[in-house]
Length: 171
Image (cartoon, rainbow, N blue to C red; front, side, top):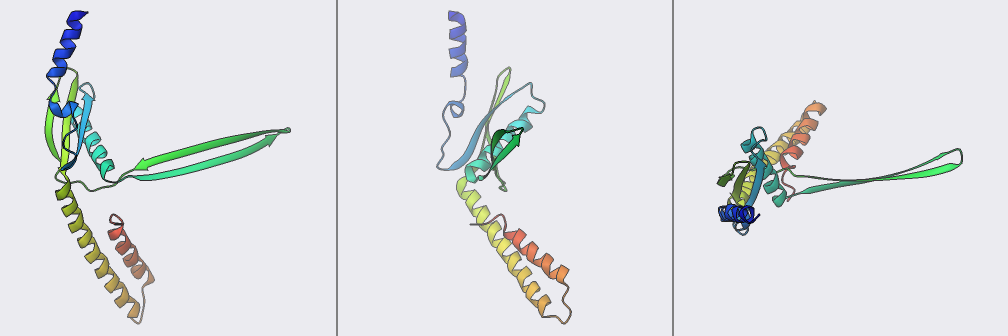
């Protein structure tokens, strides 16, 4: 028993500090993930899980719904209450770096991170490009409406494309 305790303490001492202590949250969005090495393509799974975690640190959309149904049969009434809460995230992440990895016999640990300032700058640049695209589409829309023959399918498509360009940047 003492040997098992000693081995587990020794194993924990060999873990990198970023596994036990969350890395600097002021500079980076980061994620430490652990995946079983028996999972097929465990490195890709670790990257996927880390990207999802980082994306949720940046923004999360919450959708909830409640349904209540009342039924009555042969004079007996019953109520059913169902609540569903779903979370999702949608961010374009680039320049995510693998900042550390650690492997044991059974586990793979990875530290992924993205610099917050670089992310904000990239997002601002993408938002400005989306705004320019939307403005260009709106100018084309206005021009098309002034034409003697208006193609309503074309102008409606332009409106949807302009909205779609801005949909990732509500801020």
